[in-house]
Length: 435
Length: 114
Image (cartoon, chains in turn green, brown):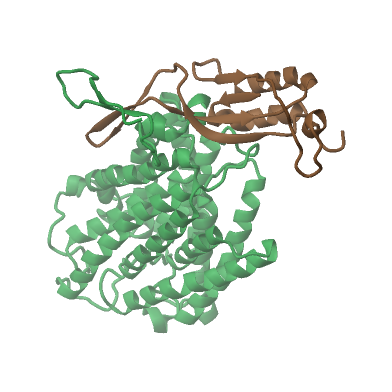
């Protein structure tokens, strides 16, 4: 993220930058329903609506908590640990640019808000198919403040990570490592699904998974391409790298799938797209397109190994948020410290181009972020769990979350469903029996 | 023999049947109503009572000495104690033929190698 003063100095609104950032914000918001579709396809049919709804709930919850408090804690002032309360409830957030920016602060707030939303939704992947919907919403509201806003301040808001030189273009720290290592903590506290490791729990719709991955990739052009906070060269570089890295990650995944099972899998391909997008997220505007391609080829390896290994453990981190986001974000943050080039980014060189100090700054971020996300999420869920049950009962888990928490099914046939007259005067008056 | 059970218990029934060494099974998804409370669902302005619940129907042809173990396995695997656990119907079987060999009756419902 360009907390660094890049190119432009005058704090004046640029309509071209503003136009692109308006579009980019909408693109990033699309990623959350896209994630809902991706996740819904990966779970069993009886839990698919609930899984999607966790992502939808994240829009409502984090959209509100961000405007109320999170934005202020992340972006008010440049204190080392935490921002202030000067922008509480969007006080003083208006049409003037923020700092050196060229877009209205209000738009900057909305753009950053969509990041907070998707990050909260990502963690749902660790706890789907057994966490109570209400408990998840309480957790989501608190997590968006105590973990996301804090990490966003450190990396984007001029906090201590940014001050000691960590480069994070579009959210390797708060979004990817933040969600991935929090997901691991959430899976450990909530516990495995009751049939995990005993029965085959298979994705119910691989086409949803691919469509969701495609829409996520589309939205990611706004996520990375917008993180230059304008329509300048860094944004173009990040945009192009968002095409190249996932494409190369796909090819690595195909080869690994062929070696492992002699077949190229569709769900593997969808996963590779996500992994590629995550890999380039921290590095997008800092590394050359050639290095971005190599990042796709090489960075997919640790993520693939983690996804192959995790189901053999007793940790039911159900949709592999740790592997696809935590480990990919970790890899991207470090890789950028090796291969950043000032000729491409105008900001800093990496280790391979003579600046070992930059790599060290990246190592610090890659060490501290996972620890903070894991420990705080673990403690937060223990506290929430002391106030209310985190898990559905075994009976409810067997029936499925959709009917239990939403009173709806993803695929109702309507057979045997008796219409209840929507007339307040006649309670439960039956008017027809289509069955 | 016909056993109608909850879909979420189908895997446990299969495990119980496997332990009881009942090897020949077919299952199908059916919808039915057995006196359980009706579930209410709402889609926008439309509220419905779901009168038919999803169930899984097992059809199992066994020889006489396997009837009781099969019933026990179905009950063990499918019981939750709530209304809606399902039913077991035991019917006489006039004839059975194994298509591959033409074996009939007892031979046709005995697993290969027994």
